Length: 208
Image 1 (cartoon, rainbow, N blue to C red):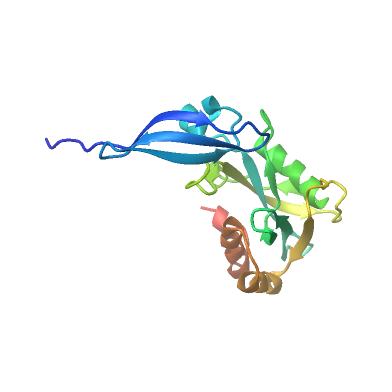
Image 2 (cartoon, rainbow, N blue to C red):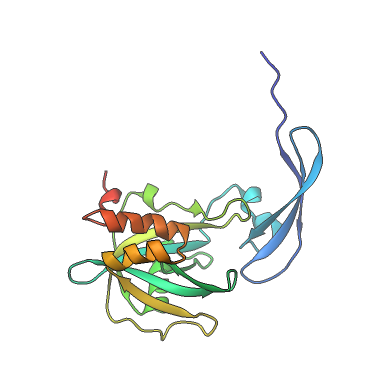
């Protein structure tokens, strides 16, 4: 048998910040050729011991809500939100953090209500469509679950926080096409909007 090649190794993890909601960790690493180096990871984890690289678990930090609105079920619920990281607005799905010990379905229902004022009727789907996916794995271990359903009620901003600047958008297919062509869109949202734009049933991809 041939020799097994060396693998990249994490030698040490150092917590560089102690902040609520997001922290920076420094990783001391050894590459495949034995050279020492550094890497940096942003994480929702409060301590190094709770990083996903330490626990090996992939519990969702957040939840994303893909919901359809209207009697004809012909509109998708979006938010146009100001994000400090880009100094401007971007179209996204309603989303938020999952509290410790909170079921991500309940978190999604809560977040949709807080951000938009709308109620959510959840779809029951195969777990593989909901399981957490990593957002920007090159720089963070954050992962989000996705839930699906039908939204109803009246749009309000009463549940939004003072630090949030969010416009609720109930977009039909024409508006979705304009958004995809002309606006900044979060990548997860963009892929789902492609389904909404081209599939007669926006949730058809959830059936097997």
